[in-house]
Image 1: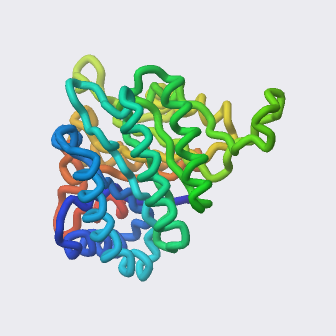
Image 2 (image 1 turned 90 degrees about the vertical axis):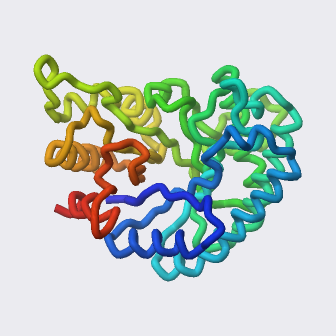
Length: 307
């Protein structure tokens, strides 16, 4: 059935908060964790490189305190940088416009890769979340460059690359990441895909509220295939590629109560049949979310998954 898990963040100075989340997820059967390191890009835009470095060290300290719990629970962790150095300013990502930030971010990725290369708790590094590059070719070039750099830093585990923006239709523009050329001067050398890459998409379809009178919410494989046609095309074009549903949630369009729960079950069943690993994003971020239940925020999700 592959990996099943959830997104969490560590934007707290108290590791006990994150340890509680790991234990709660473990009790419900969730495994893989996508740890969103940076998820408020606007205040990051005001930071200097030195301030970002200091902040990163604080976050890595929190991670280090929780690693023994993750190892004991057998919960692999994806370090998700989410929003990169430079943050978000005037609806643009300075990272894609400034060479100095690109150089520093590359160095940071290499530093983190070397630090956790032999740590059994860390499963993968995700470079960036839903980016807004200047053009598609720029993102393709940076993904290739960053992957080669972390490999040179000793990282032989997975990296995660994803489509631009929040719309999974942009899987149409995502390109394969390759191993470095054996002979860079040989333009005819056949490129070999890097086998340790996850290609991630985010699924919040349907994103519009459906009018139950004119467009009732009827769940079917045909409808899911229509929503996810671009991830499906990518998977069929590159059958060797490992696919990760890096985020999915239950938007208002999915209705409430039993309809909402059925939506989650059908989506997960579809992911599993396509051999896609998945990570739920809930906790009210995209309400209504079935994580917002008692006694456990994960209870309904994994009860649904197991039935």
